[in-house]
Image 1: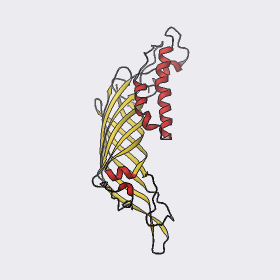
Image 2 (image 1 turned 120 degrees about the vertical axis):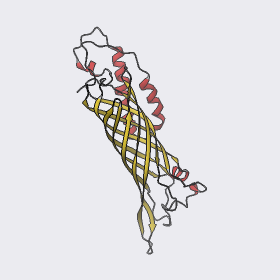
Image 3 (image 1 turned 60 degrees about the horizontal axis):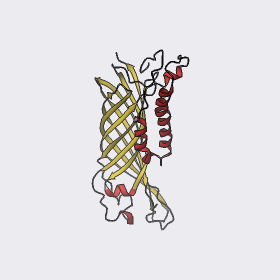
Image 4 (image 1 turned 120 degrees about the horizontal axis):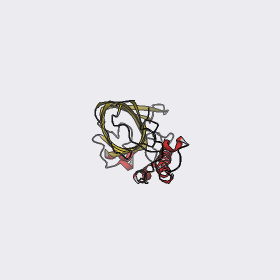
Length: 282
């Protein structure tokens, strides 16, 4: 399988500002997360590096090394592919509700989806997602008289259908908006409490609800001989779960005073990922 056929000579493309603009767009957000720094470097190596390679290669040179064509860019075939698999890691940033956004900060969000081409440019399938937030500074120890420290983490699992649309440009980049939604479950772990004998123990709070997520991604196809693309995008996710300060023993935090904990959860997501296409259609 291949995205496009290699030619007998190199066709240099002008330097693309596409990768540079996207890299700068997420740089401020991703540098604090180690795994994002790694993905960011991969994007620079295979994105900007491929364009510089193509620009500086002499077209008159004989194509003795397949690596030169390997790093040329190209869109997927006109017929598209029957299946699309996506894996993505993103950095969520809580916006609402107010108390929840103040109390928790992002750890990571990971997504995996598989979709089938149902109409030209439209894909439909199933998505699974995991999102984690941890308690923000300062750490607290409710009812423990500083004998223990709560390490509260929220774990959210979500699964549901996903529909995507792909618009491909001849230069080898694509735009893909998508919408997903379905069932979601959240668990707060590490809630410290004291029993009657003043022994420290930890409990878990659980809740369920529904979620709705929308994404806009830009795709880049750096490989001719692989049915793969790198993605970079932003999205919004709403979760119907209503955060409760008292349920997770956070109602005594000074930082959360006078902040509402009513309403669902809304967070902004910035992510990097890879897409793999299977079953070429002609």
